Length: 263
Ligand code: SF4
Image 1 (tube, rainbow, N blue to C red):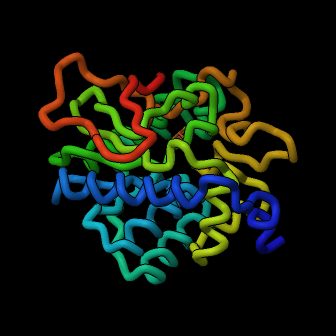
Image 2 (cartoon, rainbow, N blue to C red):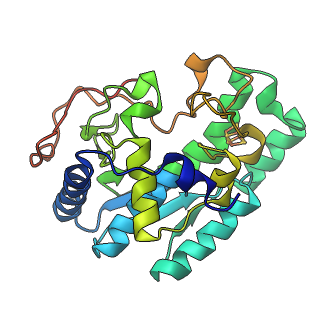
């Protein structure tokens, strides 16, 4: 099973070198424009491991943070430590408010996220959105590993846009294919979550993630009991504000997009 994800997905597709060079250029410009005020929030999934690798490999001054929801797989926590050791970096850990978690669990019992979309969203707000807000506090920009291929809602994903707080949000892998991600992981020796080798294409919290079968949509393993249209945790659904940016949007690269990110 080890290496199954690489064998399944990794391919050198036309245009890969250009896409990767553009990603590095975008990260470099983002780091320069938002010096000391930019953070990459990693879920430790495959795309985010690629970004961690690019940031570390090119010594880019971009802080790396992760959200410890309290519900992550043991394999993900092991990868967190392994990533820090592999790259010699420190990853900021953001956790939910312990008292609020206890209160939520006491009130709603086990697996409340399975009972309604509202309870699932409340759990995501408590365990993800509040810690994310702390990760972004005092920062003017953030980086994500979103890709257009991941869902219909992300099909028009721009390389950079403003979120509703006016922060610039960079998506350097927006035009990458799944094959690109795995080709980079394979050829650069990037550490990755062993759950990917067990057919978890998208890895989140343990109660909300399952393996998929060949041919299933790559998001099918997230919140599988819900309608596909509800499957966002809220981390990436913000619209840009109506007010103009205080800094100009990203300007370099041949594939620039600045359209509104879809909800
Ligand atoms: S993914 Fe599941 S466990 Fe994690 S915060 Fe959202 S509802 Fe809660």
